[in-house]
Image (cartoon, rainbow over all chains, first blue to last red; front, side, top):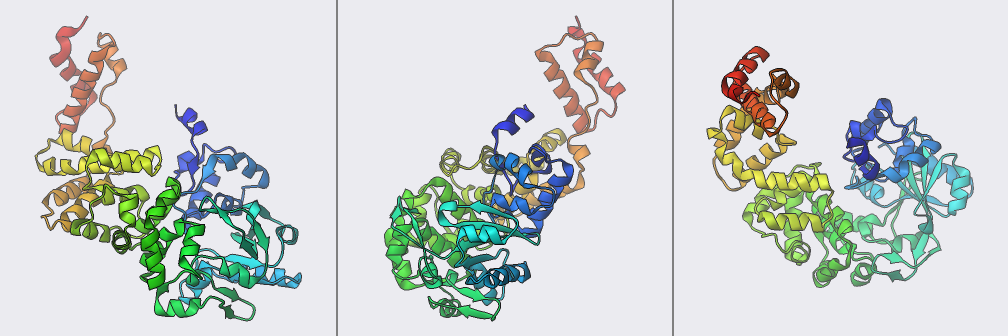
Length: 76
Length: 401
């Protein structure tokens, strides 16, 4: 049920929980934590491409992730 | 964020022979002595040139020539100076022409967002008289406000958002255009309206923002179901900066009839989870009146509502705004704080498997038995597995097959 939902849903980077972030391809607990820390430090994502700033998100990993995330109620 | 990395990008572009400035909201913030959260850069370099200069880039909005530069652990939007061709559908230009810095700022929305900053010379370049408007605390469209709003109707709503967030007045000619063009906000997509609306709600000045939405006639266009009154104004004053969007919507809609609330949040295309939370907030508000007469099991189940803290905040906001006493809130809050998650959702004393061991056959009765046991556990009348087993045998034993 949870896995099926994860396949269909596009995650809002500004509200996704650690557990939800871990459903992204190539994202485990460490990267999920970094994404949340980045979000908190910055006061939110302005656009999904900012994920590329996070150490560990390579261009290759980015391609796998980018269609599965979005940014709503963005900062700025 | 400190401007150092953004300055390095400007310096790098200049070194390669291009013009480059910081532009937009970050310059406004710097002039206002607020630390910007992001820096945008405008340059004479074409997107292709920008991509060549910086090792890590990502193309965003390619048709507008915007490149995201990943640099020293931050992301920067680097956009080529452009002027927009005619707009289609009140939102997107049919094309763009690369041009110079002056033309680039003249296409932007408000004077306060139209400043350029040269970080090398530490000099603000102001083609739109934006500094004077920051000084006078005014939101003023660049050029003809009607033309600006015609290009992108969302700007009508954005004028209000900037006014509220910064505590600025909207300059009279711009305000006239907001009022006269308010009905055309309906041509903007629900998603874009939602984004602006949410930002008005969570940027710390929700009451001021909604006051302007009301005065301008925008509220009637986007939220005709919502009754604007003192109670709502006071309630919105208590929505903190940085509030969760669904919580803020709960505050906004807590006096609106529930059947209409659903229509509003669906129309604005909130996510399923957000819709669920907003409805839960509005629907459960009256239950706080019963909280002091609830049994332990009832109140513990009540506390299981998702993000119960939001429910507590809403009942407090509602009571303060209505100048009602805070007894229900205080009781609920104190009780909630006094319990751990373990108290509210304890580990079950007995499972379905235990019932099978006791000789019950799986069926609808299972749920009834387990709920009764949980009730007794929440009431504090059953403390361990042994007691639960005895309770089941005593109360349900005769139905044993």
